[in-house]
Length: 90
Image (cartoon, rainbow, N blue to C red):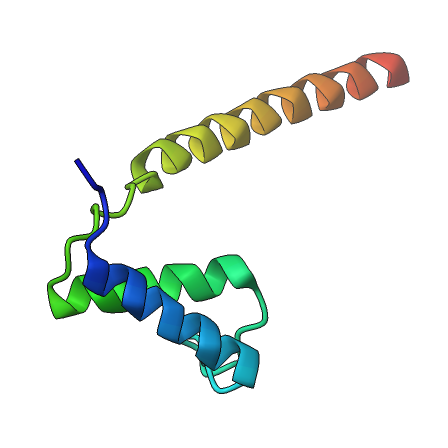
């Protein structure tokens, strides 16, 4: 079973051409230079048109959890270092 439909591949093809010409713009209005970004834009446009394209991977929840863990770990190490510095001064 194919993951992507024919219309999706045609849409990606046209976005790649626009990228090569230098007319493809990103959401912020800047010219797209990356091949991967151009493919992502093409797939997104195909999705909006209703073509057969798999849904985007949602990694926002997991990334938020990891950043929260990182910040708490940093706070803990900062507390340890300040405690050590205070002990050395005594």
